[in-house]
Length: 484
Image 1 (cartoon, helix red, strand yellow):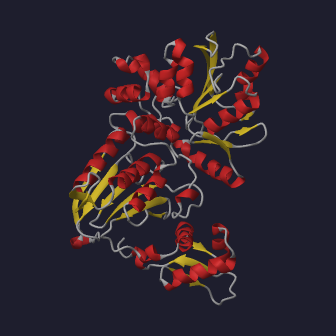
Image 2 (cartoon, helix red, strand yellow; image 1 turned 180 degrees about the horizontal axis):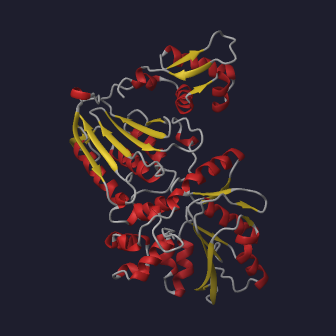
């Protein structure tokens, strides 16, 4: 539950309604008038279940209306909406809380808490709705397919694992409980408190043991259960890795422990080893300034650790620091066919919604879907090349170039040309028609931009003749790979 909502629900009855009304609708909170239909309630519940879960409060609109004046028949319809009007039914809890309405009279509000689901849910009208920021948005057919694709691996974080609750780091859990606004956080957590907090974020299985998300977030030693739960940070001398006797490694460390601890430790080392230059700072004084903005690389590390595929047992998050760039690699790719160029094209589907929610509560990450856009914005304002994304097989690689970098040849390309290059990197090989379809442009337009890429020696055309129906384009080993 959103921390502000949790605190508002625990407020004095006389203040409760107004405090809930003052909270802006967000990823995990929505409110509806007492005149709302059961169908609208079902739509909100579906959106939360398809995303990260959330809370719906009924009886609030422009003021505190309450629900006492609503007929029992309508209230019953609200209660049944999650079962009667959603396919498949969603998991939820309903309670009523006391309040004082705008007329100064005692009243009640209906509070419905919805769990994040590992399945894709649709309304009675066969609409798949997703909570994005403060809105519930109906998905297109293509977006529905992407959500189905994403929900399959999202089951992994909910998988049971042989980890008892006593393996939890109690100090860290109490810190989280305080940050998330749980009332029990003001005292030593009892065994019942521990179960309540973990259960509230869906971090326990049906037998009361930690699931994978619970282990990654709060176990004292997650690596004892999941060997891939680590971040490896390597500092290289110069601009190339080197091999054998020419290897340029200066420092190489692995960070384990709960996810928030890993992220903090890796970030501290990056801050320590990242090259700096003398420049004018935000305070108007000259001083040492990181060659890559801190806000960008921190966001990159958080995104990689929180949204990686933990189902890949053979790999982990890698952060490599060079004199001219930072590379961040993680198992798993973005959902759908994102070119890696325009962050506005990127759809916000969390691979690990439980992990993402807890990290947001702990201020490790921020609202889902904004991290990549924020990196593009930060790098742009610093006058640096935009974040460079590549998606080889089952992996995502982010490169953040400094202003001293030997930027790859593509930096001078037009946005559409870079976009087509991104599609080729994501797909491997594509025909001219495939590229045009993905980019939403005509075939002649696609061909023109592909020729620009070929002239820059970034891609190559493979075919027997200009009329070969099997001809295709692919990325070649050109300038963009020189420093990898």
